[in-house]
Image 1: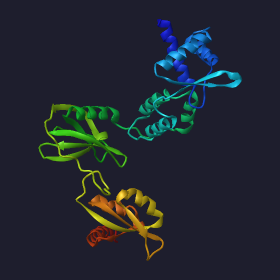
Image 2 (image 1 turned 180 degrees about the vertical axis):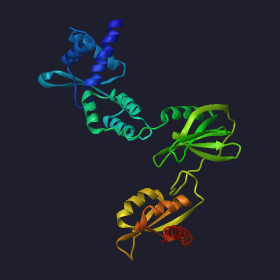
Image 3 (image 1 turned 180 degrees about the horizontal axis):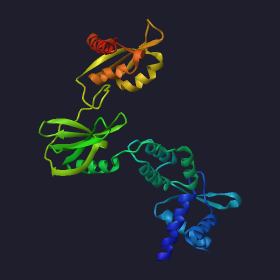
Length: 326
């Protein structure tokens, strides 16, 4: 195949990608106009274009031919890897990601647009708005790329870790311990790295967006124990002290949210003493963060049992009340 043929076929495929989808097709005349206007290829014959379409089909591209008006053949490119609804979901996910800068969001969305027709791109633009109110201080994508590579190579990790001071400045300090990166975890809209600390023989957790200057160390021969996956509700990324089956009295307006938050272990029934409430039981990880989580709902939920959990929460509320007493 001549170089000119290669170039023309690429432009024919580009036309099918841009101008057609599952709902819209293009005719040979449409492809001729596209070649003339976008590739400076005037006078390409219909026979040549139909032959190019046959070649693209032979290469594995899913090009569907249907009958249009006046028995005109209409061609549309299918099987782009993602459906349009899947692309739209990915674009929505990118647009609401608070770890990406506006420029990174635009660049990623532009790549997704390359998988869409012009009609679909207009639908994306009409549905998506980017929030540029706050941009991250670190390149999360670069951090994740380095971390995943080190996990794949089973190499130790070194980095500088940042914490805010009272002046909203981030101070970084070195984390150069015998740590092996094991897995990346998404929890409560944040991305964390779980590391196995070989010296202490325990897992440590770090926020990926607070890591800087990530470098790899030596290949590790350590075989960390399987990281725990809790079967129950946990209010924080850090391990709870213990798990208990907790019974709550929940206001009806909070019932759906509680069942979503407490997960698959949660069971609910009517409160026979108060029709405005429901009784919810769930396995919960108990630590300070659990009590703070309960506190955020005010009088919307009440810990009914176990008695010791209810008592610990009452003590916390008593201490809080004393701080605000006259």
